[in-house]
Amino acid sequence: MTLTTPITPEKDLIISIQNVRKTYRLGETEVEALRGVSIDLAKGEFAAVVGPSGSGKSTLLNLIGTIDAPNSGRVLLEGKEVFKLPDDARSRLRNEKIGFIFQSFNLIPVLNVYENIELPLVINSRIPPQDYKKRILAALADVDISEYAYHLPDKLSGGQRQRVAIARALAFDPVLVLADEPTANLDSVTAHKIIDLMLDLNQKRKVTFLFSTHDEKLMNRVKRIIRIQDGMLVS
Ligand code: ADP
Ligand code: MG
Image (cartoon, rainbow, N blue to C red; front, side, top):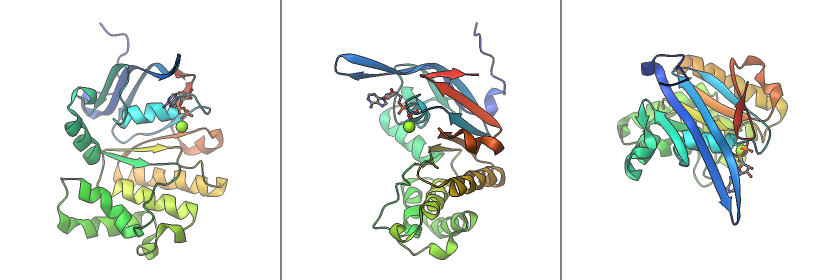
């Protein structure tokens, strides 16, 4: 018997995390970063994890991104329990299924915009090389930055860099895009534009988005808000 009934049928679930706990050990002390968190995310959802600094947002996104294993609980990506897979199979799954967007953009400074977006395509074994160009140009157009294709990242503003990072996360058609505080290094006007852009792409490309923020003001267009505090969900 289980007490939590999934609200969506299994087949539409992209992510299901079930009662995950994560403890970090710092010498003698233990930090309980997540204390029994369960979340289901259905295909096509656009959801925000909102909580103050230190509440566990990055820990949560790293578990869902299959980068970091929980101490207990289950993480299922499209029904597959990811931390039961061997490391190489888990990496392959991550490279094919999950796009990442970061607070500090994490573009590679010696590669131009086009080449930055190309990189995850090269890593992704499913995508034939003859499709790279078509995909990159489409992603650049989607984030409205086509004219900067051959610029280096340091010639771009923060908002433009984050657009490139969004294009990079989307160009290989992941099932899920994770964005950990994607607007934290942007001014509030640019931050709103980036959230709006992610929402538009969520609708246009039908890709599932999960992003985190500590900024309540950004939430006016977001339908699903997951609140976290001290490593636990709060309603
Ligand atoms: P947020 O992203 O919401 O700011 P984090 O997930 O980064 O929160 O952190 C949650 C808690 O876990 C905090 O108390 C933080 O100090 C702690 N923590 C995060 N990463 C580590 C780590 N690598 N080692 C030890 N403690 C950590
Ligand atoms: Mg964080």
